[in-house]
Structures are given as structure tokens and as C-alpha cells.
Length: 77
Image (cartoon, one colour):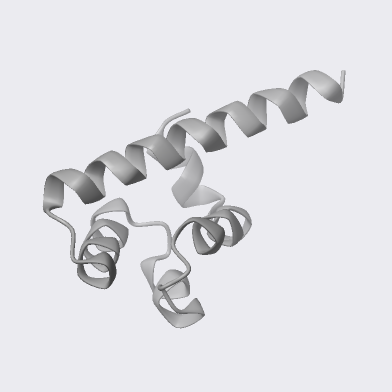
């Protein structure tokens, strides 16, 4: 899964993002509109992380979303 999938389906994925980063407000998450750089900055600020640590968290979250999507697709067949 690439980030374009997250960005185009942001309304669906922002719920999972809120579960991952509960310090981010609904307004902050909505305001990202799925923009990875914006999300990266919000996570970095909210959790006092280095850019590298925030990037790692987002990459791990992206992999989890890809796994969930694959399971969902395989179970619907």
C-alpha cells in the first residue's frame, strides 16, 4: 500500500490514525487531509519526537493499515 491510498481514503483512515495518535485532535487529523508531511509534523509536535522517530511511527502505522486492508480483502472473497 502506498501513501496515495491513505490520502485518497483519509476519511476512512483517520479513525485508525486517531487510535494510534490519541493526542492529536479531530481537527488536527481532519486538517491533514491525508497529507503525510502534515501528519508527520503534527505527530512530531504532539509527542515531542524527532523527525526520524515520527517517520518510523507513520511507516509502521502504514504497514498495519496495509495488513488490515489485505485481511479485509481476503475475507471478502
